Picture 1: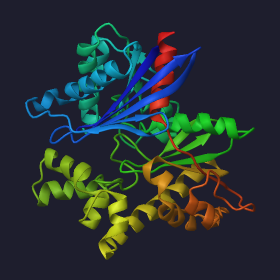
Picture 2: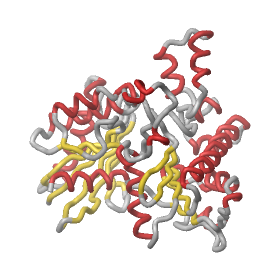
Picture 3: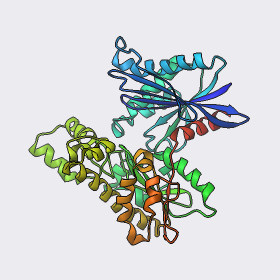
Picture 4: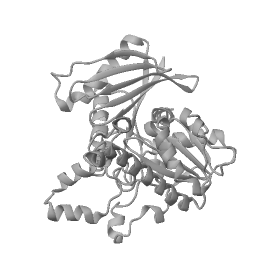
Length: 392
């Protein structure tokens, strides 16, 4: 059995998927989730239909924190060896958050690539170091396998300079300080799904909503504008990230609260967003269940800012024809979708409350000027597709 493994990790979590290659086509075989790997780890394995096959707690107590990602990968490889003794891995595909100006398409990973990726750590401090750590772990565990890097920034690489550039002196722009955009693998997957649904490409805004949230304007199948910028902290308020903020606020905090760069980074990445506004949680479901004024304010702020971003991206598109909701919140939270769409009625977007509540694939009313869809994303599928293309 020939397979491709995809790797998508964060600071304390790991998601992997195994795709079987059958006559040139990829089919999901298993998916895996490891959580809380820096403390009391959890491990779950699922079949292609999402049925849980195993749920356990691997003991990493004797493993150094910097080696936990490798131990997590080893847990998955050990499970596969038992479940599929005839498994023949062909490649491993990695989700890399930031490709900078250097990478606008998938690439085979070598020492030089790793060195280049390390230079982007300051641009994505919550993800890039762990992406690189997982690459190193895979190279140790499977040194003969091709490793393919796929970048969250590459879908946005063709945006115009008008969208990308900040109003800064040119020397800083030339240095690479400009808008990049993220969640590109998700947007690329959604675009491929849309190309099968619409005979003619529509001016589309895709809302990738979750603890990490962004939005993207797609015209003729290409990204032309997005809510995230130089880093993945920009744009919408997220689980623990503040989103767009007046730079003067950061200067004020430096001068009057004597905050260091590290303290500011912790504030805007880990202590803000829904968590900071509510003082309760960075989890949207917990905020809904809390039923407090603070939780309500955090939810309403998120939806308000998302509706404002629909307006900006509609202007970039010069006309909106379709809205797509995806991501953990976008796919599953009917209340958030309703709040956002209620603020988009001025665009001619009208939705069916029942279809929205049921999370149906098409939730707009028949007379709506805007098509409104709910489409589950699949970043792992895009990783597998790119990995297959790079190794054929």
